[in-house]
Amino acid sequence: MTGSDMLAMPAMTGITNALPDIPRVYTGICEWLACMVYIAVLYRRAPQHRTAFAAVAGLALLIAVQYLDGMLPIWFWIVGMMLAFGCMYATILFGAGAGKRESLYITARAFVLGELVASLHWQIVTFANMRDDTLGFDWRSVLSLIGIYAICFGLAWLVERGNFSQTAPTLPTTPAAIATVAITVVTFAMSNLSFVSTNTPFSGSVGQEVFYIRTLVDFCGFAILYAQQEQARRIEANTELASINAQLESQHQEYLQSKENIESLGRLAHDLKHQITALRAQVDPEHAAAGFEQLEKSVQRYSAQQHTGNPVLDVILTTKERTCADRGITFTAVADGSLLNNMSSMDIASLFGNALDNAIEATSKLPDADQRLIKLALYEQNRFTVVRVENYYDSRLNKDADGNLRTTKRDDRHRHGFGVKSIRHIAQQYGGEVTIRTENHWFVLTVLIPRQTGLMAM
Image (cartoon, rainbow, N blue to C red; front, side, top):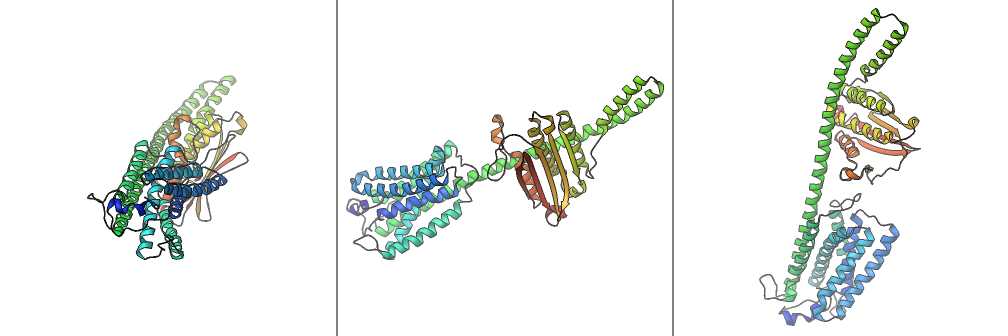
């Protein structure tokens, strides 16, 4: 509870040495700052001017609601708190551009944070007697407000920024959102129980004791909500990692199958060459010779293989080169495979397989055959192993703030960008990084892996 409601309730509840409650303007500011903390740590989809307007309007509304609550009958205070919660919800909804369920989830967390900081601040103020009994606050309480709010909300920002993504929306499940609201309601009810009745096993009867209980319960509520969000983040991260590992394994299995197919084709081509040589010795007509020559060239196409100095990369490039040929794509590769000698075969298969698969898929959609171009380069530069894959494109690319590609396939949105995420994951394992840029309809993916550190130097 807030405001002058508490001043009138000690006689009703039996609280001895009751303390004046938090000034309403302090409560409004505290609730507003809690909203600002979460808007700062969230993935914001609203433009800056809209966020600024929502912040200013939210502060004015929250303070106005607090004063309106003070003019209502004592039994009407719960409605006032619901109005304050609604203003916080609107501030986050429009300030962050979040969805309705996401905003409700975040507002519940912000409400508990605001209650915690407000209770803690006023408990310290009353304990140190930094207030004026007539006005409810003086310059010392104002300075304490600035200092304590800055410390508390600063710590909350540091703690929560690692618990929310600033590049993707927070999408709580319906059960998680319901659980969060339920925890918030229970926390609020338990922290204010002493103000309603002192005749319960969970109530206090002394003024300072009541604030201890309120602050402690609010802190526990905040800690529970923090743990809930952290667990949700870990589950999401583990799910994504499992998907990436599954894709790595799939790429590796594809490599093994391609290697076996290429070896079989190589043996077949070798046998066919000898058969053609024997047949040519028996057939003399020129047109037959020309036909056999054409047949030999077609066989040569299947016997041709990439030779980069790394057998795994040879298989990947040979397989992708044939895929490109089947789709009318011009593929060129200049690669020093010896630079990958200390990289595992699974990582090589996944890194180059994903990069080329993305390029092939994008290039295959081009109607102009002259634009179906893919270039690959693998070389050393300034003690870095550089992998560079370029392809021409003629469509709009969807990327998030990390440069991860978002799929254009409607039936595969839950796995969007896993190809680039897998490449980025592999690069990070070797102490490297991935950059993506576009220029003049050329999509360029570059992987830099240091050779003097990490696994590449083993």
